[in-house]
Length: 588
Image 1 (spheres, helix red, strand yellow):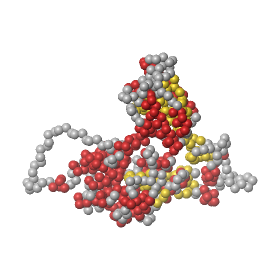
Image 2 (cartoon, helix red, strand yellow; image 1 turned 90 degrees about the horizontal axis):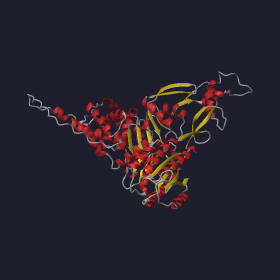
Image 3 (cartoon, one colour; image 1 turned 90 degrees about the vertical axis):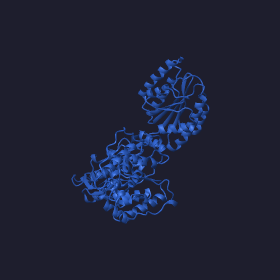
Image 4 (cartoon, one colour; image 1 turned 180 degrees about the vertical axis):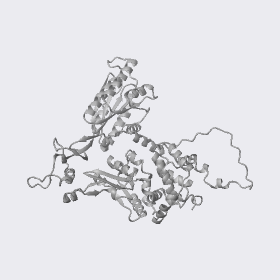
């Protein structure tokens, strides 16, 4: 069937059904599918119908929570090795899923080693294992079904997402609106045979490339996955060539979920004199082939970009802003604080060579795995022992623990508008404290006015204590900005020494008028504030932001943010809710 007489075939099915069919047809060639959905009957029904599209002999493996590297990649079979006295290999989850599907639940929380292993087999379908005295290599062509249950900033790693071609969401789908798939397993088998024969023109590949650039997609892998996906879409339609309808479906399934910017209209080319019309043929026939073939107007990058703009959802600006913020984050608050090593507490993260001393714990299974392959090569045991161990066999456990996060508010309580700023700061602190109960982070408050700065609220998660301290905070007087920066620097340094991950939020208009020695004068006070900012950067590495609370943003606050190496946010006349959202977006 040609592309001309089935151009709209891809529109027969919903995007969720079409994504399932594409993954069933191509599998490893598309990397996998990111299914954004909460646990529930809608997701369970989708997975059940997707499995029905696969052949019965297709391997299906689910990666369990807290899966170890040995269980994922394969390694030494400890029971068989101890029984036989020689190394016996055990097949891992990835090896057992060759030419099949690997299901990754809670993909947004997958550990780094697991995502790295999946990236390696998606780049090169060969599984290499060199551990526990074994050196194994086997073919491993798998497709990954990522079940993304992330909320707000939670998302899988960028490296893994870069290798997953398809992406659909089920959050807006109700169980009442869910219908059975119209695609059958027979359609999948037919499309799989036709997939390799579908052709894509150079103009279409160029259009896909321009569309990825217009949407802010920088990875060349996405272009490769998109060029494969559009061929799968054509094969599902029974076509041997790609048409415009397949490009529209490609936008929805591959490109738009990865967009990082709105497409800008293409620049108009300079007006040039049009070329002379071609001479008419003697037979009087026009070049009908050029008219009936896919024209540049239909498949050009301009037409594809226009389709992208039409298909963008209404909340795209909010989603793109949240995605940019998430990409820029280096560490997060609360349960996503900075990781550090620990001996006794935290989440296990493997084992290392060492003796169980100084509070370290013995990893018994890792010790047995290390010693098992060498039993026949070691001298006979003494005293009737059955297992021969050496100091090099012992392994001790490693743990990783996240440090607590503290948000330090530094509030300018001076001037005639201090009552307004303090009211909004108090409201923002109380709103953030409500989030602290969930994220387990703390909030502190430094207020400066008159000739000094004070820590009016030490780090706390107590909402009652915070309200009492905030209610008793007065306002008015001068702006001792240098004193506030010095006190904030010392407070942040103490928090870092305690193992916390602090961030700070400075609310001020930047117009200092009280120097370090208590003298008045805007020039000297501004110079002291900048000197204190440079010293601040030497004693603490905390991240932060400067919120310009003046009715009209002034360059003094922007210059102060630059001196502190902090993010600058002009936010005049902001209410508590806007301030809370700005702080969460910039520091959470």
